[in-house]
Image (cartoon, rainbow over all chains, first blue to last red; front, top):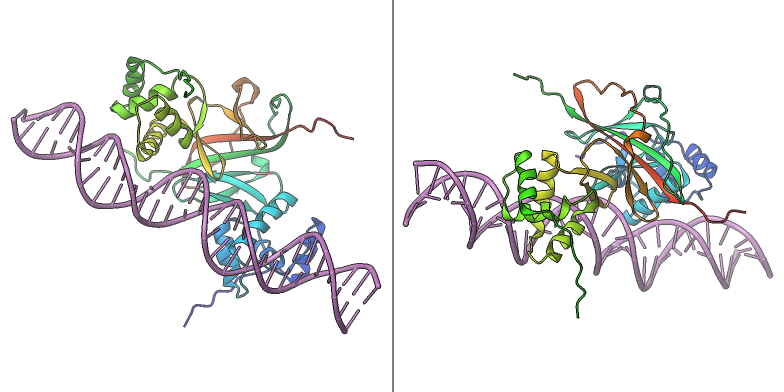
Length: 147
Length: 147
DNA sequence: CTGGCGATTTAGACAAAGTCCAGGCAGCGG
DNA sequence: CCGCTGCCTGGACTTTGTCTAAATCGCCAG
């Protein structure tokens, strides 16, 4: 028989509220996605979201997952993180914070905001305004032994 | 008739020297790539490098360009910059510095190192060591008028 | 309740960036 | 000059993401 994995989901009411707060029309599929995503702070790629949603039973198409993640990011529910040139990650913690990226494992983790001093920003190039500041600290697994 | 564009290239001697400094065997193709890349500070995607090299007459295959850029990055001649999930950029300025990324134009520009205060780094997760710190400041074109 | 309409969703075709592979070539050590 | 090792190549392949045309949904006016 197939393995049953409990996937934690947000209640429909909570998900609906989150979407409305951000001016997003809560459709069936968007709720589906919001419910699996917004349960906790996590970093997922689009493909992972697709699998996760479909694992809950109700399936959502690939195109919709991509559209929805893009919409959520635009509306500020999610934050897109670019660390790997081959795929984007979406961070459910949309508050200002930075990331560690383990290049060996591909793991992404948040940097406690208190640990990263608010740095003084340089002036943006003429004709442009700052949109967002991303700090990525790339880390490697420490060699267990070193001669 | 076709337009003739002068592509500045490094001399073969200089390119050879740069490769040897970094412990890279200077083959025909690697020199070709080094000569067009290392003439000045620039930010290029792999596809752009491919076009650029082939525009000089001597052609190099796609696989070799990818392999070589990866090798150069590993050996510290280039720095890989991830700003856009759909393609990687290679920065010929390998010294420590950060970037502005214009999300409207896709333009990447260096941040003068004096303008970006050396921030105190947070402690890396257990079992890992810091490899590199990337700061990307995303900017948008300023709206020319705003009521 | 019913019709209509714009927004949303869908499957699947398509595109772009990058990787892999098997075969051929190059250049160096002997 | 020979052979070994590493390098290069074209082309097939993979992965991630986008596009399209058609079906469906949600919701309001009548």
